[in-house]
Image (tube, rainbow, N blue to C red; front, top):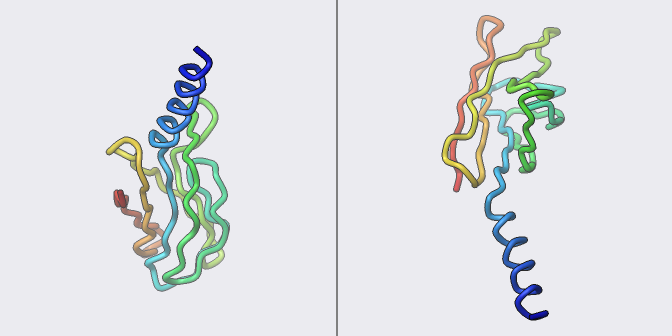
Amino acid sequence: MLFFLLFAKVGCKDRVGQEEIKIRAVNNSGSAVTRVFMFSMDFGDLQPKDSSEYKVLEYNPLKDDSLIYLFHGGTNHARYLQMPNHGAGHYTYSIDSLKNRIVYVSLLFDR
């Protein structure tokens, strides 16, 4: 009986880890951006071609924003983000460009 409970607990823990959605930000624009926030989580400053670390997405639609916020060229920028659409896995939000005071972001499913 004890073996079964121990096995069930470990199995649940492994399964929960597999169901996590992890996200990161990559700056594919030619400009440095600072104070990058996505889903109310801080991703720091990103130089051109920089990447943040993956973070577990713990999104609560009642208190978190489905937005990316960043600072560039003396201006705060924000844009709504597409939610990850493949379920569990690793996702990259790519900051593709900043043109005409608009930030262009694409979502990529890594694995």
